[in-house]
Amino acid sequence: MQWDIVIGLEIHVQLATQTKIFSGSSTAFGAEPNTQASAVDLAMPGTLPVPNEQAFRYAVMFGLATNAEIGRRSVFERKNYFYPDLPKGYQTTQLDKPIVGPGYVDIDLADGSSKRVRIHHAHLEEDAGKSLHEDYHGMTGIDLNRAGTPLIEVVTEPDMNSAEEAVAFAKKLHSLVTSLGICDGDMSQGSMRFDVNISLKPKGSDTLGTRTETKNLNSFRFMEQAIAHEVERQMDILEDGGSITQETRLYNGDRDESRSMRSKEEANDYRYFPCPDLLPVEIDDAFIEDARARLPELPDARRARFKEQYGLNDYDAGILSADAKLATFFEETVAHGKDAKLAANWIQGEFSARLNAEEKSVAESPITGAQLGDLVVRIADNTLSSSGAKKVFEALWTGENDNVDAIIEAKGLKQVSDTGALEAMVDEVLAGMPDQVAQYQGEEDPKKRKKMLGGFMGPLMKASKGQGNPKLFNEILVRKLGG
Amino acid sequence: MSISRADIEKVAVLARIKVDSEQVSALEKDLGNILDLVDQLSAADTDSVEPMAHPLDAVQKLRPDVVSETSQREAFQAIAPATEDGLYLVPRVIE
Image (cartoon, rainbow over all chains, first blue to last red; front, side, top):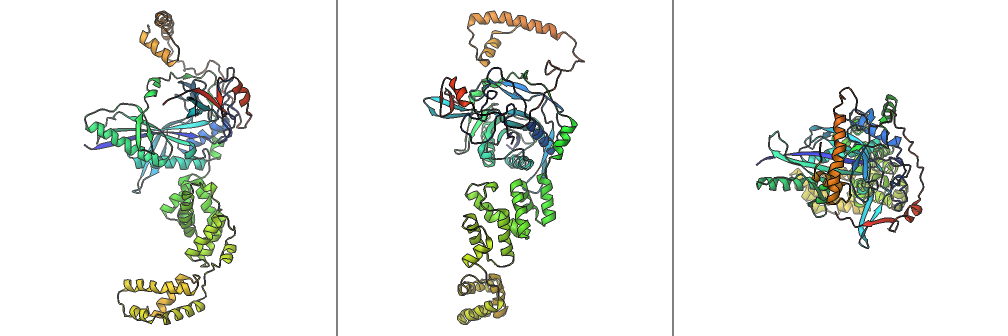
């Protein structure tokens, strides 16, 4: 049987505020346990929440960037459940009157088409603390530093029909919130977490099947794997004549396994009611216009500009514009390096590969865009061969030296481009290889000729101590050998 | 309107309140009375009344995003039943 896959996402986005949503405690990452948990965060009796203006500003900016209606009057509700990392016994969240109403995001797919994914709404809420399940004499350790960190939860309509579309949406959202500067986007630290709702229906059917929710996926790769895994699991059950149980599942990416979270089933009755500690929040035109004025260039606009301003192709422009920090790095590189295409190649090649290998973000790069730009200049003006350029990059990366020209000088990497000197070397090398020269000149097939030409390059590079400009060597060779 | 024993037992579990079977009978009556009272309220015509989120006719004031709290972990943990390595310890939670 053929099946349609139906996917909706819920995404928790940690807002990059200085303080929590209802208290003046710092949200800085990595502090000693419970040193950023105040009386409000600990739910001490007699405390009252006071909402953080910046959390509302960021939520409104998100709404404006996703073409959404802004909730002029939003209301906080209590979502009641018991868990030790939630000291109040309820999460303060929004239900009926969220800050961000219906909106949409357009995603680009690999086949070149684009698709609109509707956002049902996005609401403000507080994060919970962290439970540490390592053994504390048979007990669980609780760190409440994260409790009260502002989140927006973005809820999409079930508009995605494949893992590719879901991941494309997730990446677009990541690009959007990091470009807006409202989230640091550090998924390994839980700054963005994805819940995936999946159901299957017979191909072409209008009736939605029973869905499951796979919770807390914190990487694009796990998300893709979890969707593939769950689709297969549901397909197996349905094709054996079984039925899907509506449930919450946990996916283990390291083992590619999922299991039901049975413990939450009973608690699924959250008994929401309006929070009596908080008055309705009214957002006026001035607040919205102020938020609009703070909107930076968004990824789609940046992509279009990169194509226009730097002559990049769609693919390069897409990759370099998606991440705000990478985009800034690219522009800094081009400002120094001039040659945009070369800069784009180096950033997507050597630079990205090195970041990935060392699991570093762009912000943690040991080299600056200006340095890479200087390197690009020396590649473009033929001072450096590609192997020489890699050596300079290495020296910059390891911090051996921070100046491109100084490295070229110190390592003797300056390419010889003096045609007179190069011609002399070619004459000498050809004189020493008469058999190969005769063989080359006797060959008719241009492909074979081209290959044979490579046989002269080794000795030439050796003769020039690796400093001869290979492009010029090639030109001289072709000319001397008679085309 | 009445409330069933099953409803009372379910709500008690959700609220983590231990209720024995004799108490359930008493609660059935008390909660039933309260719900009857609510039913009387439901009879009022509210078609032209906007739902109220809060009894006060006021709007929430917001706070600037500036850190105003310092760590008082020691004081808070002095009244906690069990702590270690700066963490609050609770009975083991198994997912």
